Length: 333
Length: 267
Ligand SMILES: Nc1ncnc2c1ncn2[C@@H]1O[C@H](COP(=O)(O)OP(=O)(O)OP(=O)(O)O)[C@@H](O)[C@H]1O
Ligand SMILES: [Mg+2]
Image (cartoon, rainbow over all chains, first blue to last red; front, side, top):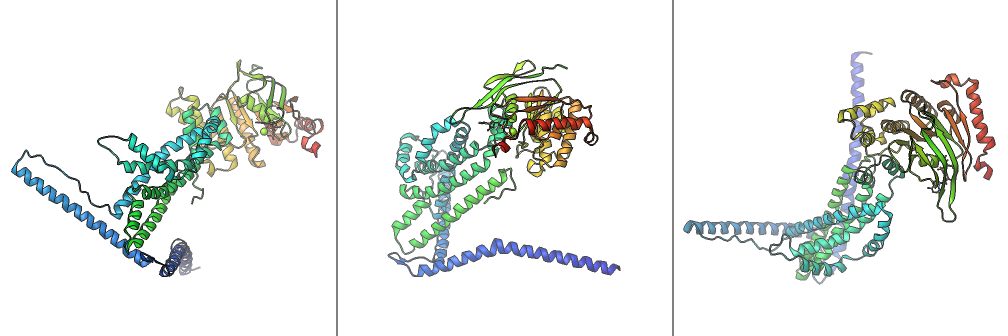
């Protein structure tokens, strides 16, 4: 075989390789982008079709285009509010500077800006609330689940209580939590607002249970052989929990945490609506009470944002789970 | 050599069940000398694992007891290391870390960090697993996992090494390799070993004595056969050895004539 023939052969084989690669890439693009894109497109069309046929007392039910318009308005409103805030502080600073120039020992006051909370502000509040509530719940639920999973007697004591409180709706808790927070959280210089705490604790009370139950199951079903290894090595309780119990139960703990976070996010919106606590729930309620022709569109924006945030939160949890999970082969979804 | 290094005396055990308690073992007596290799053989369900678990301290005998080097056994401990049938490695720790966990428990006070590292690597090289220190058990074959399980136990320098069908789940070729390694290691280190097996050839090849158990319930020790074959033993040479085949036959006769398979009887 001559040198050119060999070269030709190599060229050909590498061509085949790239062709195969291209196929793989195309496959991936179809799977990751084209199919979901197609689904969304069909959904938007159906939505528009249905929306055109529904007329409410507040006007036409919003279709995708109206919702898109409203979302732009909401962002613009937020921008305007921020500009106002900035100029307010600027004016205040100038005023104070003047005062000081006249009289160096003058007492100057710095007032905080109290504008209307915009849609974007409400998103921030809701996220903060759910994060705090979920954090508190996790802090209680995981250790409680581990203890109940390890000891049959503790489990028998606690189980009826868990089973009773698990199905309770968040809205039933809300009045109680509100009153308790008002009664117990009395400080002159509050670190958190009461409304924030009320929402957060309601969230915590509801997203406790999936984590507790799943952690118990995870801990109680540790491989007997591994427990025997621990007994033979005479591991201390803390080492036993750290090296054997927690790694074994991690998949179940995360299943619980993801359920909890999803529950918490749903509960939060309802709680904010009912209690008029700041957040996305309040935004929806206010728009509903407003009853302008744009209200339904604005509410629909909130609905979509709530959904997307829920989706993102779950994806974040999934990413964390993949990081901490020792079984890299496990298929997580 | 002391002949009563490990004493199992008058051991019996009852398991609670829904109706009446189930008596698994009765009057089990066995004395084992230091450095001896003992095989336990018997039909499935007769109580071999139960005996081993009692010696390990994982089960508590209803009657009688176990004395190891003059002290009564009443809880599990690292001086009686157990090789489990299904390797029982922690799947989230690497090969090295699995052995390290055991070594840290036993030598926390007596070995420095560097000494521990050497010791872990030394034990893994005994079972020829020093090439896979940083692999997770999920990335190993069944035989490799079992070897790491054995290394973990060897590294604890136990007074007695307890093995519950250590090679049961392996193919014949891998099993033969591991049997040879185990013989080498035991020859070198002089471990006292109790091994459960279903394989008659394995029992004759490895053991100083074969303990044959009767069928349950209320199982006990039927016969004890001393294997007086010179060491080191070579499986190929022994295949034609009349003594070897004679021992084999005695065990087979016990299992299939004197103690008919309970499953066959029921059928
Ligand atoms: N924890 C337990 N509770 C109740 N019964 C048990 C328990 N452990 C073992 N048994 C019973 O004791 C008997 C002996 O069991 P064991 O596991 O010791 O058998 P084995 O000889 O190891 O069998 P195999 O060769 O199949 O492993 C069996 O009849 C079994 O059902
Ligand atoms: Mg067994």
